[in-house]
Length: 163
Image (tube, rainbow, N blue to C red; front, top):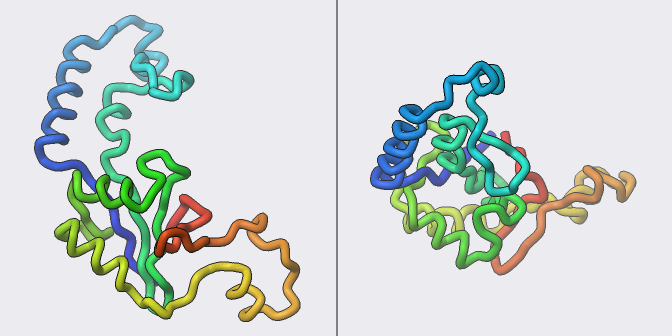
């Protein structure tokens, strides 16, 4: 059991997104093909995917930052570098928005950062040492050899799928 934390846009940023959404809706191509395709006519940054106006509005609006749990160090979700790839980039990203927990409680970004950095400093880390200590004799192949790692004082999850 633990608590997940998310970065959400500022009110000004979400208002800008809303204005773009309204503009996109007003300009919708109402052809049969576009309706059948779910109004997915907005090119995604990756050049492959196409978004509907609602997909575009929601994209990146709720970014999972990480999770804390009793007995474990705070584990950060780096999303394979999609939003940030360094400690400094992570903290700048957090400070540029708002932070909420999974229950919708808003936290001050700097207070959240301090809480996360100081959460259970002697806690567990899901790494090979932990697995072998908890399951002696277990094969070294575990979760495709994907373990959490420590980098620049942060525990970074090997997974982007938190529960």
